[in-house]
Image 1 (cartoon, rainbow, N blue to C red):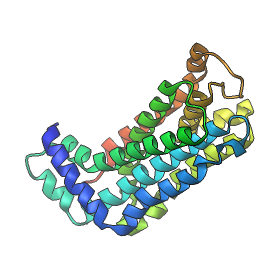
Image 2 (image 1 turned 180 degrees about the vertical axis):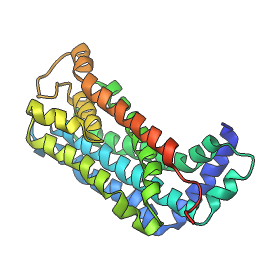
Image 3 (image 1 turned 135 degrees about the horizontal axis):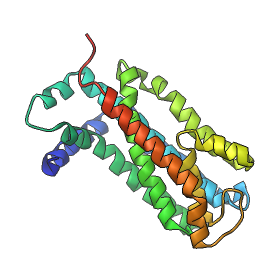
Image 4 (image 1 turned 90 degrees about the vertical axis):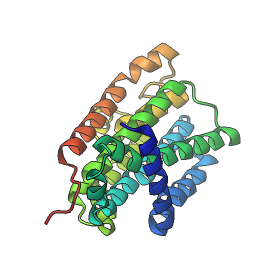
Length: 254
């Protein structure tokens, strides 16, 4: 991969993102509005409220800024044959994809840092295990960027991206909200089987320093308790990357 070429392509993609007001509002404005609404209300979710608020903040950023934006942008570039022209040049496939996907991922990371920083600054206790929170953000970015690439297979044009991304979007948000109201072990395993369920548990565990059932534990036990969520997140990330690598199309079907 040529990093300099990928960065140059990323700058071009970022300019195109800013010019598309609809995509820019979804990628930038909506996650910040939703996230800021949670900044001062984490305590309303109960004892582990700030962990749940952080999970909602991170997950909705990953879904809107990464997943939906990547799906829309790559579908648009494919439709206008931009991907085909890039691929006919000297750039490798990896360089092209990193350049096109990179701006959305970088923007998401900036948003996560800003919102979680604002949450701590306002009222919340800092995360007890930042390592788990960071792992959730990294795995989530990989998972939803690759999922966005894979979803372009079923997305005929940019206008339909909000429809084709809806199943994953709703499933991931369902995992967050169901985990707020119940912590039975059966439900926990069901939620881990949903893309985003493991990300939610990693953030909650890392933020409040508790097991999935709410029991406060030490640092080592937090890591041990998070292993199923970590494994589920790694597995879903691998599935998404494999699907993107196997089925991603560089030009429209004729």
